[in-house]
Image (cartoon, rainbow, N blue to C red; front, side, top):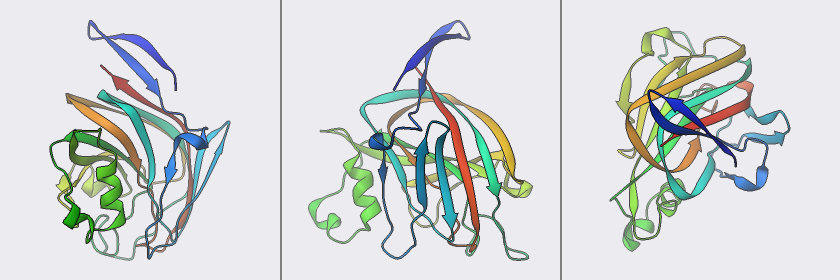
Length: 216
């Protein structure tokens, strides 16, 4: 994991290069009732093959990072297919070809009794918290396939731990390059990539060639 310093708005920041080619840095999870994606690592980057599937891809940090921006580039092959009249993010259409989640440090913890009843992915989320600390939420930066939801934000209806910000438009196959800057610093303990096609029964692949975090 390398970082390089840059001068931005008269302040000294660093660019942290996310290791997209190093399989040993990542944790690839499975949902209990959903077919998992196939994830491959190479010199070109991380390739995620989706076949009506979904699975979290997580990069924990040894020490939390103060993130002020995100840059990502790659290539989409194929695309999501929505039934007529189905809005992306709604029931039957809650799939995205690219969601970059920032797991943010906070004060929320998971007690022993709650751990017995919550889903495995929620347990994993809280396990990412630094010792003696907790989690606030996962904030997802979404690339959307429908222009009508671009710029929209929401707390996900499935959990108050999930927040989504639809910041990029990815509505056709091909190469892409995106950036996003935050107004406030995020204290991030892990990256959580969510790329799926299970709800829309879609098959496609996405290659992430570069992913960098602007850190303070």
